[in-house]
Image (cartoon, rainbow, N blue to C red):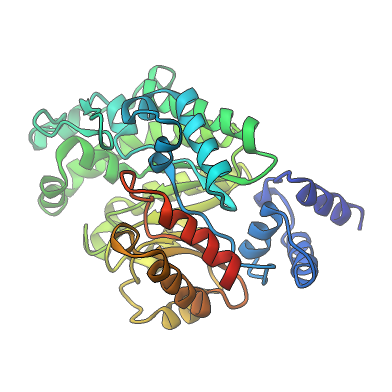
Length: 385
């Protein structure tokens, strides 16, 4: 009882414990109590998320606009500064949290962070997200896969800067919200250095060469994951985009990337943190990703390949993982606030029953549009959740 009271006091005070290090019966007891209390009063952001992760009904649905670079406009910080300067990026995330709101923050820069440290040239446009310079890829032909080696993580400038961002955000907001780190899986990193279409072809024709490169990349990714875990974030999300119809067949993905993302997931779990997956691909492979990574949550933009409706998704996977999503980003760009709120209500009605659901866009909030529909997401959670 003393441990239960101590954990509950921490949650009410806004301190997120490393959930993976706590006994599940203890977490369930706290979530059950918070669920009951939430019928009569508002929970803290952290209580709300923990209750949801334990598949109990919170006071309302948690929400995150996954604002990321979209919050630059609040203080006028440029794309290049956001992508390369942890202090300025922290200003972006903090201002988005204060100005727009939300129950958790996913710290996501761009998908070229890791590849940059493996030698890939990156373009930092003034008006859009950083991206690889595909006119000069690291992997120009299949023989170049064998040249990829683990790197000295202490000299990995962009990854180290992202770790610094995590530390700053934990210090600034770690007592007020749930913070999650992020990394691209080894196949994703490799696609930044080869180009996706060439990589898919090579996975079919030269799978051993691709796996060997993934093995080298993953050695450094494990260090990157461990460094994020040590900052005090509550979870780390692994982007496994190519575990979907946009990437490889299910069998080929499991053969090439499955074993490596399992190692990353195990590193996160050993640190007592929650494992999240982000995959905004079409017809993504929920079953394969759960099999290899045993995640606590999956952030998604489209229904998985074995579900035809949101109801079927909830029935099949709702008791296995917390579902995060899946308001279409095109709707956020083109839709009116009322249209966005209607879509939110439809998803809440189906997916929020018995907890295990966080309202969010299917991917990060489009960075060059007004924040109007980010507010719509928050409003919808408060009104319909």
